[in-house]
Length: 351
Ligand code: PMP
Picture 1: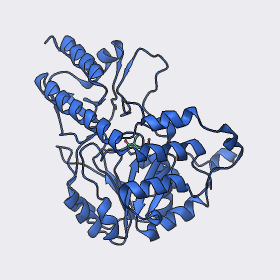
Picture 2: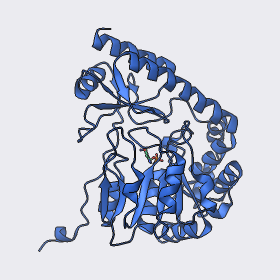
Picture 3: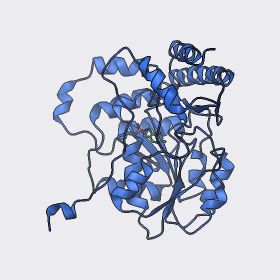
Picture 4: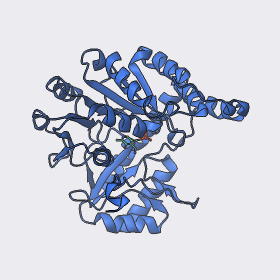
């Protein structure tokens, strides 16, 4: 018998590579290519570091208030955390506590099975259809909870919100988490449904559409009861999840609606242009409503293209996993970055 027998062992999630070198086109982790709102930069420059002596506000009020004003949602229906990973990890811990399996697609955010393993939550991964769509009937079976990323990652495909509502409505005995990390890029949000269904938790993030992946800010909406349960778990785990700069700067980022809308629409425009160019080059993909495109080439393998791009200082993401090993997930960068990507792909394909 060794202490190692009692270790809570888990195979961790593998985050996308964060290369140290500078001269690389980094379109592998769905980061936003534009800087955060101007007020964020200004506030950071003038921030009073003497405040760091004190603990941050455990209720995160400045950030919750800014989100409440932006989304017109009561403060009691909002939860914030250290990126949506922290919000999701806390939600798994709080709501997925049944002997029945939690359900999620086989191809989705690859952190879900890791949290389930970590907490010893039983789960079942339900295969997506061949076109990467979700067959909602698969979710009308006894279960211990459901999580759907919508739009899904890494596929980029959006499940119509009527279908998401069917899943929520047909599973009143469990919590349904809808991970909307990418919903700002032209997808539809189920946020309005939080007042209709008390078993719904909607999770979003500042990492993509608000250009703040490095600051680690995520949030969730739900009915007052569901948020109270989440807060009870959080305050039983770590009172001070969010640091003072993340709270202050996050609030400033939310307040600049015009900048948010401008940068999101720039990314959507670039994405739509790149879709057409990729199709011309022989790629195919499910239509993306996100800041990335999950594409495979009709003739070349995913690995070949990945390696060529890598050798040319362009980093995309690829998983050596069943069903998706020929796909590349290409984040939408600036127009200049995407032009270089397309010209390198043309070079590789002799076009
Ligand atoms: N959900 C999905 C579907 C994601 O792709 C990501 C990004 N890796 C996250 C949640 C977590 O993002 P963050 O913790 O930066 O908010």
